[in-house]
Image 1 (spheres, rainbow, N blue to C red):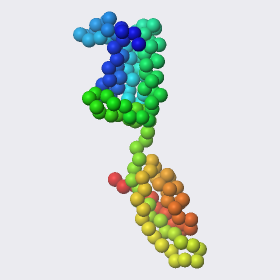
Image 2: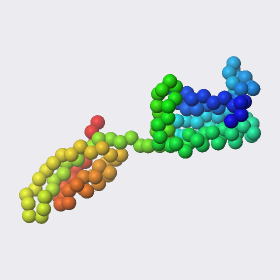
Image 3: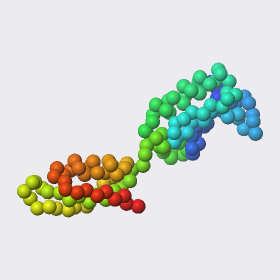
Image 4: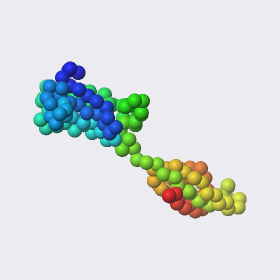
Length: 139
């Protein structure tokens, strides 16, 4: 990368700036890459000859989506964390038979899943003879 380009890792993302242009008492910002979305926003007035270098440098981070990187004095952050939905805890109450000739049993299981359908599917794989299933999201 050219000596003209300064890149810095900040709490919300990476900034690329032009060391030869001062704006508001700082290097002029050329681009920003969000850790959350890995979206690269390039300023409209970024010179073309610097743009390609910034895109190539940003791609190094975009290619590490899902990996943790270290920034700012040893702190770590998951690249693209907004692209991964949050998992929730569900209580799944299931009524089932051990086998066709056995008595009915009821059990409540705690399941971590992205949504209620995934929680239900997880429990359905555990019990072959299900009579009834109820999924409740824990708050």
